[in-house]
Structures are given as C-alpha cells and as structure tokens.
Length: 459
Image 1 (cartoon, rainbow, N blue to C red):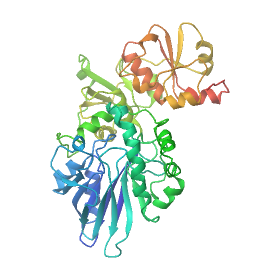
Image 2 (image 1 turned 120 degrees about the vertical axis):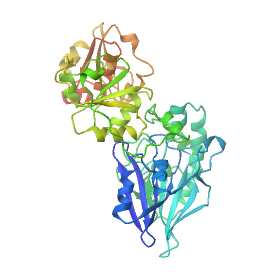
Image 3 (image 1 turned 90 degrees about the horizontal axis):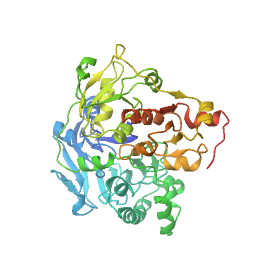
Image 4 (image 1 turned 180 degrees about the vertical axis):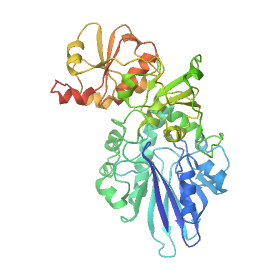
C-alpha cells in the first residue's frame, strides 16, 4: 500500500492519497482544489488515480474532487446518506452504510457517521490480501485528534435553526460505531489544529481508535448524553461566514477550475479610476502601517489569509491583491481553495503612489486614552478570548462580524483597535478606515503586549 497525507496548513485541512502498488491504482479522499499536487504524486509513484471520494459536503473549503475527476477520468464516490436535502446535485456513485470501494487490493468500507453533518461518512480501510482486518479509518470531520466535529456549523453559518441539537444526538450515536472498532486502527482526520470545525483539535496529524477512547473528551461521558451535548455545544469558535457559500458550492453543479490561474500584474494607472475594486494588501502588517493605498484592507499572506479573506470579502467583489513580486501563485492557491476566484490582478509596486499611514499606539497611550469619553477601546478577538480575559473598559466586537454589522455606534469616537497579537487588529482597523471611520488607532502590540507591560486585566 502507498499512503500520503496532503496537508494544507492554511486551512488546517488534510486530504489523502492511497494507492495499491500491486495494481498501480489510487484513491484520493477529500481533495483540495489545486489538484496538481495529487497529479504529481501519481506521476512520481507511477500510479493512476482511478477513484475520488469525499467524507461529506465540506463547509470550510471548496473541494477539488470534481476537478480531479475531470482531469483523470476517475470515478467519483459521494455520500447518498442524510436524506433528500443532503444530496449532491451532480453525477456520482452514491454511497450508503456498508458499501465498499475496491482500489486494487485495497478496500474501503463506508460507515455512516452523521453528527457534524447528516450525510457524513467515514471510510474504513483494509489492506488485502495481507489481512482482512481494518487498519485505518478516514473520519473527515467526524473524529479529530482530541476532538470531534461540531454540529452547530449548519445553524451558525448556514442559518439552519434547530440543527445543532439534532446533530449532537446523531454524533453521540455515531461515536459508538467508532468506539466499536479495534483499538489499533489508525485514525486519519480531515483537519488539524487551527481549523474552525472543532474547538480543541490536536496538532498531532493522526491517532488511533484506542488513544482517542482514552484521551478524546467526547468518549469520557459514558451514557451521559446531556453532559456530552452541553460540552459539545459550548464555547465553539465563531463560524466563518464563507462556510455557507462553501456548503452551497460543494453541493451544486458549478464551473470547474482544473489549473491554477495566472492573473495579470497591474499598474496603479490600471486601477486609478475604478471604484468597483476591493484592494487587499497582503504585505506584513508593519509594512502596511508604514504606507498603504487608501481604502485597502490588510490581510497578511500567512497561513490565515484564506480564513480571514473568507470572513471579510464577498464573493461578488472584484479583487486586486497587493503583494511583493513572487507571491502571486501562492496567494492565488490560497484563495481558490475557498472559491475566491474573482481576482482581477496583482499590484507589486506602490512606491510611486500617494500612501496613507496607520495611526499606531502603544500600551501607555492606550492606558491614557481608553477611559476618555470620546474614545472606545474595541477588542476584536473571539468571544471566548474576551470572556477569558480582557483589558478593563474594553468593548467587544468580533472582527469577523464587521461585514454584516459595522460598529456605527462608535463612528464619531476615537476607536482604538486591539486583538491578541496584532494581526486581527490590522484587519479590523483597515476595514473600518475603508468604510469611512476616520479616527481609528491600531494598538499593534494588542493584548499580549498589554500583559507583557504588566498592565491590569479583568475577566
């Protein structure tokens, strides 16, 4: 058996390339959208991708399964579980509980594991003829290392009221199927630490059934369903707003993108008279603070670029990305993985433009200003972070909520923006300035610096 995990750090998302070396055929599970990665693995290992499968209708990334099928001619295997509202709307081979996929000498048995979503399935792998016993399970967003998939995403991101309680009950029952597997079975989940699909995902890439039964909180409640449900549904991170669009695009028939597109390099003159463009400055926050184009939003090109772009940018917006030359392909890949394809081009030189500077304040300035009647200190972290500890007198507004609801009640005040370490603060400050807030101050050091300076905090 050939096995390779493909891990996208930007979305903490794992996909899997599993091949039969005797027959030189392979299956890819939960493919990301820039599919050249899998084509290269197949080429290097003299294998043909004959099967493509998904564990569920994904919410956090745009799956590349159909693109991979288009290029390779592979068969597409998708869940037909979950009822009529949870069916994929394009041709595929439907899977139900107990079905088997054969890939050369390998077989993958389908287990219906609803909870995160109604149609969720897991794949139990056997490596024949060496053994007919299960050796691996690919769980998607069902069981993670140290955590399980959250059932509240459908309600939080897609507005499906009442689904989180149903999902919690389904998850409780699905976990019994998982626990019945042999302890030695390897667990390969769909996400790792940093994903918003759970609240306590481990950083270790894989686990075993036995280890999860000992260590994972979800298996510690026994028959206490109410205790399980209450813990599962409490303190989950905010669900990114783009998740609703991913659910839709992963379910319907949509245009395919089988290659990483190349976008033009634009000049400042190209955009000077256009008011239909959204400027995203992907440079480091310190460079952005020194000088940036008026109206541009600072979302840095790091592992969180796609996540925050999904929070702050609409799918109907025409995007121009500001970056240092050489980063264009990397940024394009990150954005195409969540379907942000409406890129009109890149700007790699703003030296000749009229630039604006960010108003930066330090801890002492924040301390002297924050209690003034004409000033508000705005903590833009997640609600659980704010609840755990914050700067006295701070108001809380999560940065990801700004697209739906700007803090207009503070528009006439001086607004000091802070987060945990400064990245989200620069997103928030630049977003407010783009939307007509003129008295914005960025506490670049944010909460970590506040504590480092020995300043007072509260809960």
